[in-house]
Length: 197
Image (cartoon, rainbow, N blue to C red):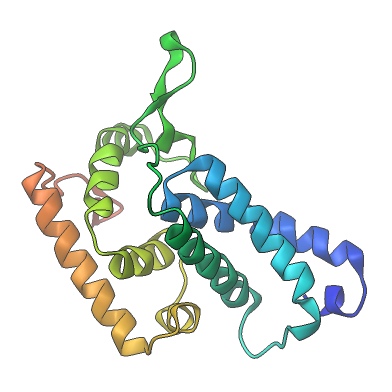
């Protein structure tokens, strides 16, 4: 980012290549709407370009870009509260090859066959459980679990203190655990010594 700020246009291409996928996935999971997520991703990168002269390396670039993306998501949600969004469970594709929209969001590493099968059954249930969380808890969960952002950085992104972030994460986990249990997920599949639910 510092190279781009100082006028190296090629550095911007590197930033986009490195961060486009994770930032898009965050926005997509936040909004639940692919077209809106694509628009917000474009707005995020435009804001990065427009604000590049103001960038200071006080925090990691990822913290800065996720803050921009999150703020755009919040603003968009406020503007579009009256609109309906497509469910991540909604089928996409041709009739013979239909699959849930949520399946189009890629993972970094291909899971093993047992875990892939379990994840295929779990994904719509988890999406449903996540949608039931309050927005503040869902946002912390997504940033931490889907994007690996530290609690300290999440605090910077969301503008609350780190203890509040940890508290929101704890409540999110408790809420998810309860809701998943209600939906019949028991956490029995264990992979690499860890329970997968």
